[in-house]
Image (cartoon, rainbow, N blue to C red; front, side, top):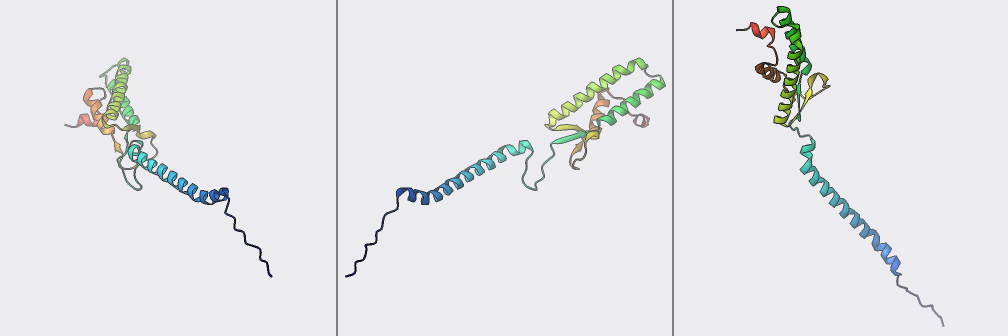
Length: 161
């Protein structure tokens, strides 16, 4: 007689079952968290991206900056005032007051432009590089200052009829 030992089949312990299914559920939870965080980031970029200057890949947006050649405007004014002193049209004592008026009006014109456009105005002479689409306000600012009387008309413009 052959006696065969009965094959014992023992059910797996509950801790082993948890470990086997825990890997898949942990992965599913991780994937769900990544999807939710990614979706939240997409929504935040879409809402706040334009205000921060972020645009779509390769998309060209309107520049958020303007430039003005402040140094050139100041140099033109100093040369014009020097010419007026040499010609005797103003006294040297009048130069500081005219220079101060020019400076105040220049700052006001630049600030007004920034307020009206909602864009930052940078000094062109300090700018390293900018796209061609960045607007140069130097001529507009010059015209405003001449019209207000804060800046002298260039000598070559006075000679024209």
